[in-house]
Length: 141
Image 1 (cartoon, rainbow, N blue to C red):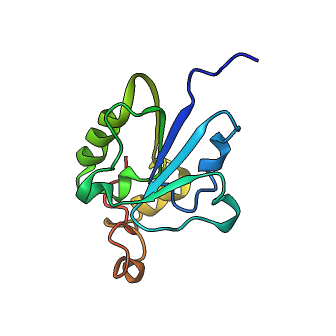
Image 2 (cartoon, helix red, strand yellow):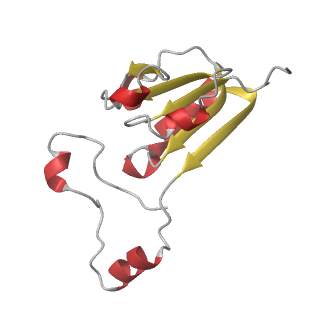
Image 3 (cartoon, helix red, strand yellow):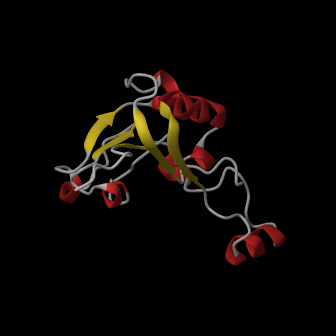
């Protein structure tokens, strides 16, 4: 069996880890980081989790530690997305792969809400934001 060349993976803002484990294949080290521990019990044995607020302190990994980075639907929650992008750049190996996603602002439902003036920013549950500093969408890309 040939060894894979992309074996160290990190999901920044991994949430409950259910997307993170999609990259687990027993040859890959799969890590997740989030400011709170939301990990689903079913994935805890497959994700090496760190509870760290990368927006405040960065992540406690060495430079160029990862072959693959994922940040799924995180950047739209940040007032300073450059902090995330700089941290991702620091952690990614020179030949690494970055998967950065954000909701599509042009999706039909969101488009009609904006058109009708019903979609305002920050977007999301203001009640949840009382307990979660990253609950709201502050920018839609």
